[in-house]
Image (cartoon, rainbow, N blue to C red):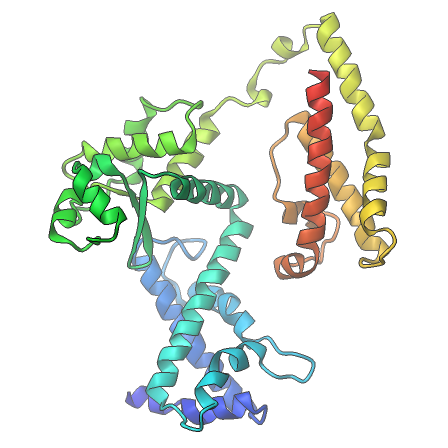
Length: 374
């Protein structure tokens, strides 16, 4: 508490919210927010999350990540007012009774941790678009499944199924929230006192059972069945482990680029006709993209000409990748190729809805063309 007193949190917040703060006030508040964020990031690292690029514990790396994550808290409007701080803290000062430093610190900690979680999600999508896509698909598959359960503990998200509990009645009670993850019988069944299975062991053991034709829910069930038989390890998995395994085995699948050319290039009347049709579609693509952009954004002047030109070039690249079966690139990185100064924050705020709407329309048209040819 003595350390907290030196920040004079109550007085500093009042001045920040009334826009009468000094540089010293702002720097002290940023310093406290950064310390909270770094502490939370360090906790996540000790819990097994990979935060910094090197996954080391250097303070400089964690500080850089922390500052990136908490930056949105200090967003200001034209009047230089702190929008997020006013939105979050004003309710504590509206009733005349000013909270003490400890209450305000707890609220600040909530705000910082919320901002860090959002910031990490954004950084993850930028650093690993394939992993982010897999994570969304896996979470979606779990939420739609009646027999796969998510639970969170110490900021890690875990997964288990009835095969892990080996007790249908207990599983139904868990689903109905009559028992929780801390119930003694649940702890015993899930072997929560044991360590998680090492990721390399999990990959090696799963290799014999892997099939590229498995849907994600079936793949998760197979993984959970595998760990249920490993009596020396915890009887559940983290979502991060599942993402890691799926990424590893997706890389092992044979792509078109790995198939010898002679297998694909033997000339027949059928594939010669298909090739000519695909060439015809691509020849028409610049005109179709131009008409699509003009139809949607050509008259309302929402975007300047250079942005519309970048849209057109990025959509052309997307269509070439789509028709040639090339590796997918995230929409942000695709547009950034033609708008080099574009940041992920600007993309989300200004361009994402428009650009991804165009991609959605273009993909639907191309899909119809391919179906008609084949």
